[in-house]
Image (cartoon, rainbow, N blue to C red; front, side, top):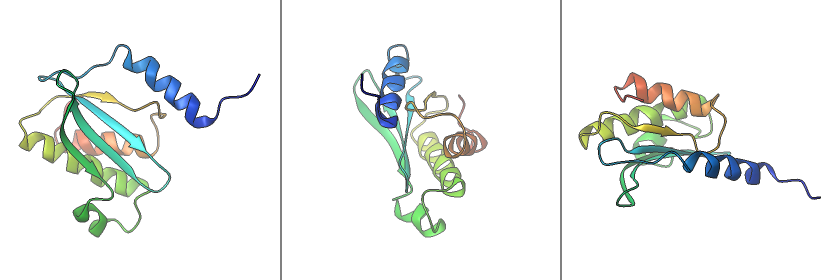
Length: 121
């Protein structure tokens, strides 16, 4: 029997969590994707399937502040950026979807940055 790759295992974890986790207009989903060099996050309303706000280390303002997008400092900047964009859209509370990634390192720093900027989850 063939072993699953790390990404296949992550996708299986994400599917298992997404069975019960869904974003509503009142409490949208904060979805995280982490690659080796960058991290991105979206605020998604699953009832309409629309993205309400997004932030990434590839954005110009974050790229100017962070020299490298694959570290904890850049993830914290993305977290504060998404919290500010969400608050500008009138979103105060979200449900956190870590995308099957473990809650430590860059994912944890992103969540801490968003919480410090005033987003509740």
